[in-house]
Length: 203
Ligand code: MN
Image 1 (cartoon, protein in one colour):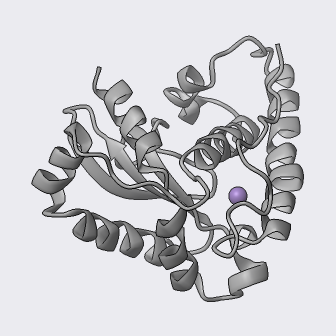
Image 2 (cartoon, rainbow, N blue to C red):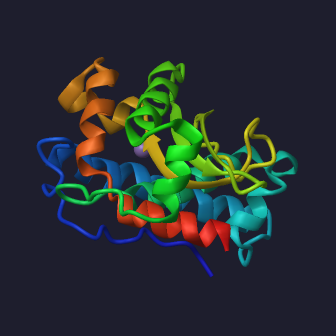
């Protein structure tokens, strides 16, 4: 079995003006495809072709940097594409909304905390909203292509929302203005998809 590049559930220009079509196309067909190719090669080299990625993340400290970087790259981007949608969606009233309110105070407070994590991640990496082992929501960030499923992550849990803050994700449109990219991100977050991931993580 080998991993494959997933199709995007929308066209490359569908997230404009918040993420431009050229960035989306390069990000998907070059960057993400590159992680898929390197992941398959790294798994073959380690004779781990039939492994489940999430299982490997739980012992990533014992595996090669190739599996860590490209496995994280494939998983993180696959998640990222699915929590975005043209025009965004409102946070549905329900379990996630209640938990956001009790943990952060309000959705706006969550956004502020998350944006701060994304803005202060030095160099390349990701900001995350996770469900931790106690079922609690938490905001965290990871360097490079690490993620909170990895046994190396300081804050571990199931990611339900992620933002790619590598320059390749925003530089064409925003250059060095990462905070403007982070602000724009909220216009295209699919909170219904985030809630689905929340309910799955809690079950
Ligand atoms: Mn990326």
